[in-house]
Amino acid sequence: MIKTEDSQSLQTGHRARLRQKFLDGQLTEYEILELLLTYAIPRRDVRALSRQLYKKYGTIPNLLSAPMESLTENQGVKENTATFFKVLHKLMELEYKSVLDTSPIFHNYEKLENYCRTLLTGKSVEEFHVLYLDSQYKLIKDEMHSSGTIDWAAVYVREIVKRALDLNAHSLVMLHNHPSGYTCFSEQDISITIELENALQKLGISLYDHLLVSGDILYSARNMHLLDKSLK
Image (cartoon, rainbow, N blue to C red):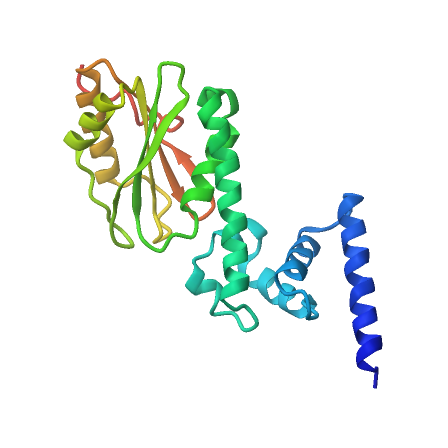
């Protein structure tokens, strides 16, 4: 039997090697997760737990975006560890948003996609957000318009138009998720998109896109040619 002191020494050595491999850019995603866990759970061997979590969630972004209740269901993950993951998730969201605040969204569309996925992947109910943009297509404000059930969230066109005028927005991006896993824009999604586009056009405001997050995939109504079908 290995003595406690020897076991602790082996564990310390393993963590030091993980840190060095990270600094050398040689860690796999699974090993990065293990390294993260060493900071969240500093006095335990976390190799088995990291394998368990990686098998369940598949990727680190999926893990970080999972709801608190999903994280704490895992044996070995207590509230402190789950909170650690959610803090990292929030930092990712803030980093992506900072780019949208300072440059036109089409200059780095990947950041917009990452922000949307980070914001809505893993949510257990449908949320509808509106991103209000200025004349240079930089983000003025991202606001959650409504939160509903697993397959429905209310959209009030008049409220969105009023808010756009209040913020002096030049254009808008609609954004919602499908927690149910349905990967297409529904007929109702398309109908409300056209209704909002019509209402905005009358005021000289454009609808830049309607984005849908399903799982970790982002769908664009603009790319699917679902916009510009409004009545002129």
